Length: 253
Image (tube, rainbow, N blue to C red; front, side, top):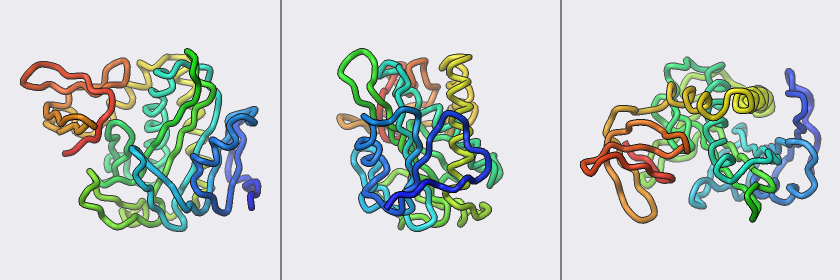
């Protein structure tokens, strides 16, 4: 059963919000609602029965954590839609920095937020549309606010929660209000200043720039020095064979 969330703080103008007791996943819920949305809509659930992350991996999370997806129609190309993962990461960073020292946070390309080098949050993007522009974009965000799932050696970063790393307790609805406000601010920055400013802010917060890391794609494994993120959002590694731009990979360090 779904209910409208009670107002918590200042919700950003122009954005709708739906809070569900339970769903399979907020990303799946967003897909089901995509055709009918009129304004950008955040969908949050207190519980998920089938949440997923990148490459179809299950996203586990307990009661008190954030499971949310923003579904909207940004009138942009597929490449521009993909670059909004950096916008979302900046918004998440600013939101988490209200509860912990920002020096303990870092952004891990392409879609993770680290707290004391453990994964506290993840971002998943999905877009639909066969033409030059997307019909809709869904930005899924999971944050371990209260608890973290068991450590999995197969994952590339140990899971941590905001609370177990010394962060102040926060209800998911309250966290979402701040996150939604920060996301709207980042959208404004993108509209006014372009992706270059979003990218600049992301790089200021990036983990392990200048260090040797390994990128593992579906086809191969590339090790090199993390140099930058290019204007298209690709990871640039300096390898023995020269600079290598990588569009999507899992990062290990």
